[in-house]
Length: 542
Image 1 (spheres, rainbow, N blue to C red):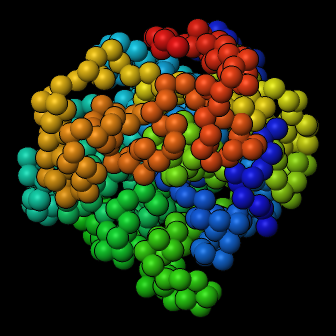
Image 2: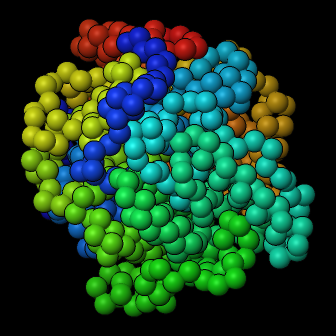
């Protein structure tokens, strides 16, 4: 059993470089994956808490997740895995691009950055069709590439709108819009380097346009993953599957998740329910038999785990599992989602292959979400220019090499930036000019508009108090829903500069930035942060 994640020891100018594939036969052959190149499954989940992991003390005997547990038992748990930006969109950007989300160039990001007069990372960092992505590089290197599940990062413009959120999804015009939107998003996904895309949610279920389809359908996503494995197997190429669950992100109520109508999907009503996972009605029975509390949380987690199990079984059935590497990654830690506190950025990952890695069952190497792309390319033996990525490969650490002390990890989200080095964490919170002086009238207007939209979509209202403080993520009084669990939770939350000794204070409760005893360390860490800011586009004044 692995002890509490937070108790574990935590021991550039980057230019945009496009991978150029040679036109000569010899050059083309040099970039093709060998027949021994591993299949790679990148299984990314959404919004997990520490107690969702059975292999951590926080989750021990609280959840039934035999397939996740198998990966942890037979693979390597990356104890010090971090995400650059703990929010759905930028976290996924860093995984698929290997670059910091503030390097995004899509119009929405540039517009919001200009409006805030500083680089502003949130749901706005989208991948565009001319970007050099991980799947595109794998594709060029001889892989067949596929995606199923939640998108929320690849740019898909001009989706059809629904005037009435509560309209009947079975109406022909609404069914047509849902299908058109799904097809449009799948095409956008193919344009960034995926050969296959199906069973895709372009956003979270609550944001598909109609309340009736605002439910999860994990079986539908799994069916697409299985179909891609079939396609990859018959192609005789190594395969890369980016499989993004919509769970355990809300909605979490059983009737909109594990116990929802299995015919409802992001594309509308299906003709028949997928039959690729254990029957849903067995979920509470199996949890109860394991002596675990049956509730929507545990049911959703087992449903998610069944999806992983179905993919593993399919790979085994077609003889591909022995040559497959599985990455299991949670996009952000939910204890402080929407901030660069440890409870948001510090999220465990697992890397599995048959027989395991030399590193053993755990690794304490400090790794970032921008490291996935170069690590995967190294595993595939596909060459790349080191300047392509902000991250670095952690394959050497899986292979048993010890990481030298001193690696600095960088974080960015909303109005916050941070760095972590040798157990010291430094954060800066900088609000745009004028935000602090916003009038009560303007605060009230913003909050009322925000709450009206949430009410229209039957979503929870965080606050109706226009005097509530802003969060680290959004200019909405009291913060948006994504970060509401952490807004104001930390004693130093409102402090512009924050310094923490993570080894002694893993909960980040004692801000040392203004403590005379630690002024030198604060300055040292501020300089580390400035080094990153100097290499990135846009501005963020310390």
